[in-house]
Image 1 (tube, rainbow, N blue to C red):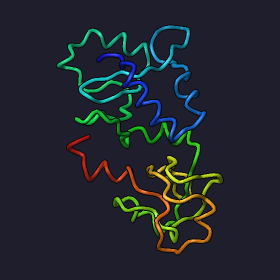
Image 2: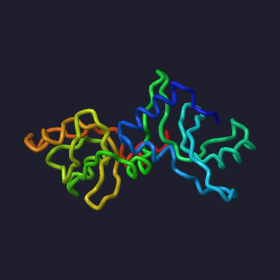
Image 3: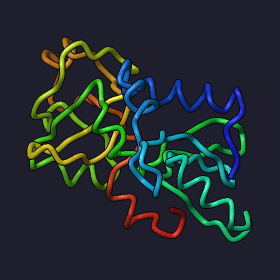
Image 4: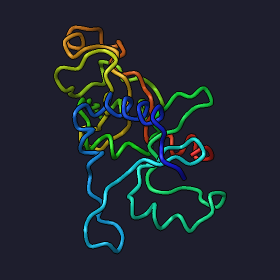
Amino acid sequence: MRPLDESETTQVFEKLFKFTGNNLKNIVENPSHEGPEPDPGRYCFRMQKNRVYYVSESLVKRATNVKRDNLVSLGTQIGKFTKGGKFHLTIQCLNLLAANAKHKVWLKPTSEMSFLYGNHVLKGGLGRITENIVPQDGVVVFSMADVPLGFGIAAKSTQDCRKMDPNGIVVLHQADIGEYLRTEDDL
């Protein structure tokens, strides 16, 4: 487990900023109340086998006693680097994104299953949408009961969504909680 280098940190922060905006500061400066220390530590980003983890500093200190080969996971996995060097967010970071999301979309109950099977969000399945979304913004997808279901990229702006066809794509699917079942061997 090692700290991220400069280019890796830039890629991770750019991807997180796409979904959280200025709330990225809340993720970086979040105090950690784990461990025996009386004063709260901080959370940090660490890399192990091309996977990036969001973990408290006190847990990182205690994990130094474990050999790298024996360490499987530590903290919350937020993404991974591909062989080509690009960073992709994984579904495990959904709780972190949902708590700090800048743009949100709520689905009608009838279209939740379609999204959980890996399909894009259509205009007909849209329950609510936050204002000021522009195309290519990161969007967190919720059920009408405010349960985070996944995340994706906005295909249309908020204004374009109001006047488009019900079969038009509003959010391009990136990850959803159904992946825990579909790809459980790879997680």
